[in-house]
Length: 216
Image 1 (tube, rainbow, N blue to C red):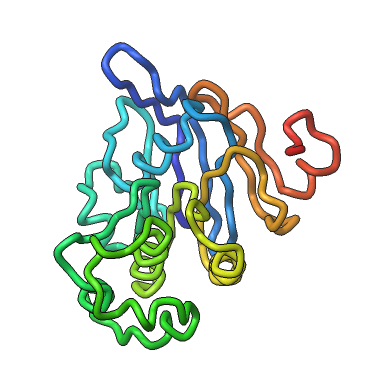
Image 2: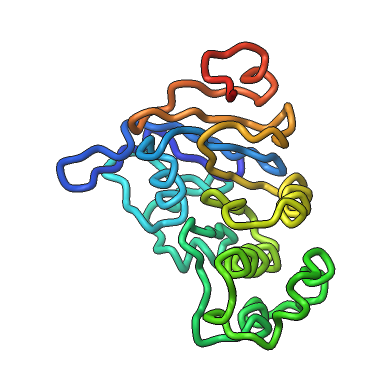
């Protein structure tokens, strides 16, 4: 198991965001967190990334307890989060943003040629969808150990989304969505959340085969 939450509880004031949640991210496998707004999907990602400190339970990376590590230390270990709010640096150009990874940008520009004409532009000059693509491209370029994505398709053109899905299918990734996407492979690991609890866990193929949580 590459990354996991075991029995994790998260409070926000008197409210419980997560209640004894178990989430597992197997190596080289795509995973989904499915649920309505307020179900705890984002709280899971924030806890894995270190933005939220749980009040109970364990966070493991390759069997190591990383619960006490701050976000930047987890990122250095390869736990990379792209939040729903576009994570771009307004003062930097697209080229400068990609250069922050310390890796040649050409592989990601080849995968997403829409980036090429944007390289000299500052992030503030990009549309919402372009900013989303930039945040995702920067995360992919780091070749993370685990990629955490909060509704990554938001604002992307269908053709760009399709190429993003190809990239995610070969990585250890955990994505949030309200319902199971049609493109999710049958072997993808799915966690369905309701009110801060995991109420179903299994493979996407099982979910489509007749679970009451099946997406329309």
